[in-house]
Length: 158
Image (tube, rainbow, N blue to C red; front, side, top):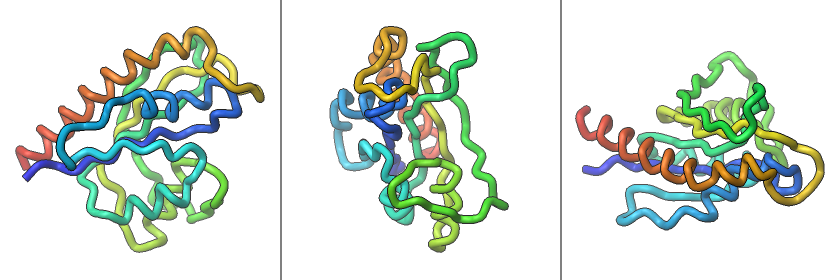
C-alpha cells in the first residue's frame, strides 16, 4: 500500500513572504494517484488540525521561516511537536505548534512531519513575495517532491 502524505502550504498572503507556503502549493501540479493531497491552508489552522485527524502517514509543511541572514534560502527539517504545549487553537490563525497541540486535544496523533521552509525577507503588510523568496518557489516545489518521495519510500519499508 502507498503511504498517504498531506502537503500543507501555510502562511498569510497579505504579509509578504509569509505567503511562501500558499504560493508553492498553488503552483504545484497535482500528484498522480490519490496518495498525496496538496492543500493551501493559508492561516486556517483549525482546518488543518481537523484534516490531520484523518489517517495520514506523513505531513509536509511548506512555510516561511525566520530570516537568519540568507533570505530565499530553503531549509528542510523534521518538526518535533511539543507534547506539553496546551491546545490554544485560533480558528483564524496558523501557528503550527498550536495546530499540533490541537490535533492531540481532538484525540488524534501527529504523523511524522517535515518542514520545507524558506527564509523570509519581509513579512510586512503587502501582497507578493520578495525577489529572493519568489526565486525559491520552483526549487521548493522540487524539494517537496523529493521529500514526499523519500517519506513514501520510508513508509513502504515499514
